[in-house]
Image 1: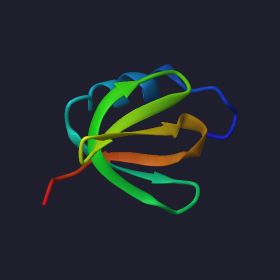
Image 2: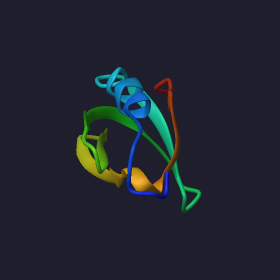
Image 3: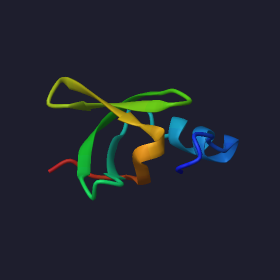
Image 4: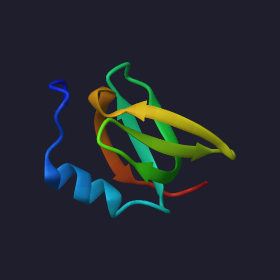
Length: 69
C-alpha cells in the first residue's frame, strides 16, 4: 500500500474475510495466520491464539483466505 490510502475495493474485499482464517504477509516478510476480526481504514486485527494482533494497512503486502491446521 505505502501511500497511507486504501482503495474501496481493498477495504470491501478484506471486510468480506471477517470471521475467517486468513494469511497476511507484511513488508517485513512476516507471514501471520489468524482469524480476521476487524478491518479499519488504517489497520486490521487478527485473532492469533486468542490474542489480538494489530497490523497496519501500510505494512500489508497481501491477504488471502487460509486454512487452519
